Image 1: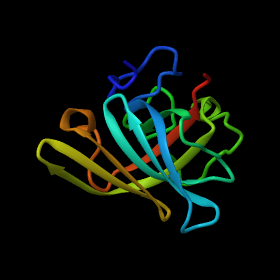
Image 2: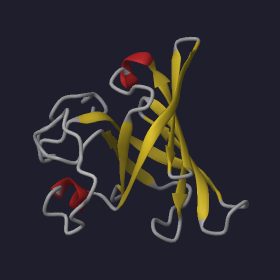
Image 3: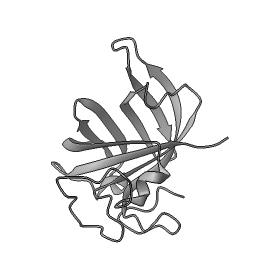
Length: 156
């Protein structure tokens, strides 16, 4: 299972230290409130995800399958590294960016537990996300952590 890679380096992924990674099926895309942004409802192998996505940049439809991962840094080989305040957008510094089609950077603003299920809420500059699953899945995610979400469509 791809999602069983919390905090470890996964072979074949440029030695990225994943906080969590899962494959999701898009259940619904609601873009009634905003013209360009949709709230995407997804079910994963071990988690549920609601996330706001800029649909002009990353168009999605119900039924599509996504590979989504979370990391604290884009620097290869450095699980605890902090990214610099400036960024070389060529991708040379972080080749993992070339593996994904959509990336956002945000801050965990709430983490709650309800009956053994953990909910992690992240703000990506106003685009919101709620990730829900078991406690063990999200042990590496903490309140006020800054994280990246990386997403790509999975070929059918």
